[in-house]
Image 1: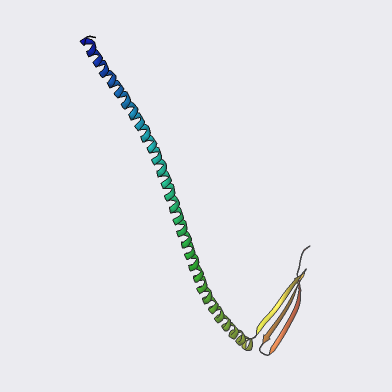
Image 2 (image 1 turned 180 degrees about the vertical axis):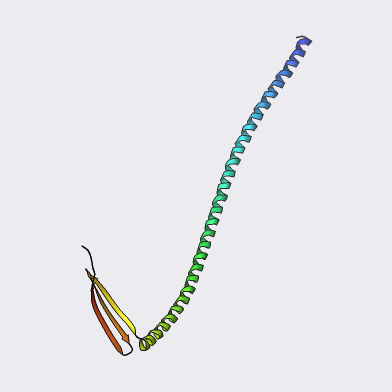
Length: 149
């Protein structure tokens, strides 16, 4: 082997080594790219899981808040209803007292009218009782109704 052959072999070896280095670098870069893609996929999945977890926590907190607000509103409405009912009952009691005295006064000074009626087939039966102090008057009357057949 001559010096030219050795030089060519050295150059070939350098070329072979550089091709091998390039190929190994390509393989390493490809492997790193695949690893980075897989890591990115795992990170995306984990971020989605965290978002779902936070959304569930938010929903639970919102539901608890809504239930608490509903309970407060319901309790307030019951208390208001109770207060209004008490006021209504006091007023009703006062009205009944006034009515009793007014009716007693009306019966003893002016009198009153009571009565009822029955509607049967083609006649009206009317019964009235009129009281004026100690005097009483009863009226009964049957009124025929003109019904065309």
